[in-house]
Image (cartoon, rainbow, N blue to C red; front, side, top):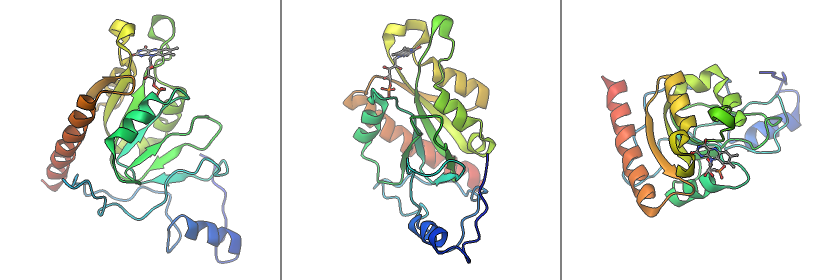
Amino acid sequence: MAYKTVDISQDAEALERVRALGYMQAPSSSPTPTTGPAFAPTRSASWLPKRRQSQPDDPAGVPVLTSATLIYFSSVSNNTHRFVEKLGLPEGETARLPLRTTEETLQATEPFVLVTPSYGADGGKGSVPKQVITFLNVESNRRLLRGVIGSGNTNFQESYCVAGDIIAAKCSVPHLYRFELMGTERDVSTVLKGLEEFWKQQSSLSAA
Ligand SMILES: Cc1cc2nc3c(=O)[nH]c(=O)nc-3n(C[C@H](O)[C@H](O)[C@H](O)COP(=O)(O)O)c2cc1C
């Protein structure tokens, strides 16, 4: 990843920009050491660092940090985005990957679950969206990935949510759940309960 070096003690505009990100000091590009997040039953995000989310107009080359615990891709059809909205998680707990691969991808700073649709061509080729590949090509993002949730369409039969299967196999994480299109109310409540349980387990694993 290309980085631009800026001395914020000399560059007032850059300092302002860093402050606008919510930092009181210069951020580090290395991920924060994790103690494992606990999904509070209230879904409050008090344990999350106060940090700004993705901004589509960030100039290329500047990593966009996110402490979201649910990171997702959704194309212009927005099905996955609608599903994530229905989860009603607090702002800052979800982050959407940029639509265009020319935009800088996100850099996760906390363990997270990835939600991705499948976009297969002939023979299931290219099922993982290239925006997701770009994101997972960042080693620190792969290291913080804890699980994947697949979205898709059952019309694709044996390729239903296949991107989730591929990522789970490649990154050795569980494919936690699959849902169709923008998901049903039942999907929403199952995922909310499942994530809460999942983060509790992760938390006790990292405490052990
Ligand atoms: C060209 C194309 C290929 C697709 N391939 C698959 C597939 O292989 N498996 C699957 O489950 N769904 C597949 N889908 C369905 C999408 O994953 C589904 O519509 C999803 O909800 C899209 O999410 P998004 O609107 O957030 O991008 C495909 C859709 C399109 C348009």
